[in-house]
Length: 149
Image (cartoon, rainbow, N blue to C red; front, side, top):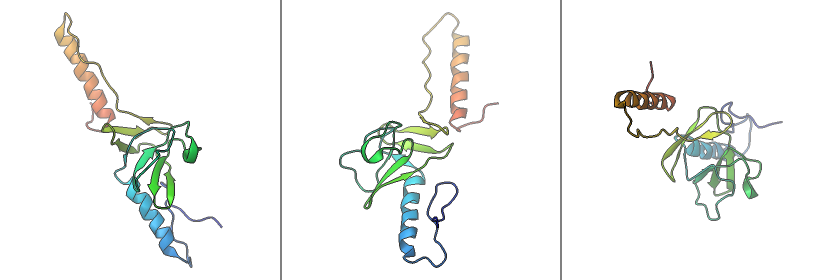
């Protein structure tokens, strides 16, 4: 018999008549603690850190090694019991604490925010400014900060 889990993040559910329910419940709370308003130390990175602190999280790279092997794109959570791995969902966002970037999972990879070049002068300043503003609006809309019309 397989253990029941939630459909989105595979959080463990309690089973009828289950002994030691606190273990399953605590596992679910540990995963929720890491995934709600997700914040990761860095990532994607392929190698686990040497001396992680309990509760720290990373986004695992696609060429993961060591304890992270085979866990590409997942969120690695360091707990008192070792590493836990949570699968990302399409549209999931995580703040990368190393630089403050808001990463977004597109269903296949973690994407950093889009960048755009600064205006570099030109003969027709008005058209260049309009182009930059249009690009800015598209990027803000892509991040869900506004709706472009």
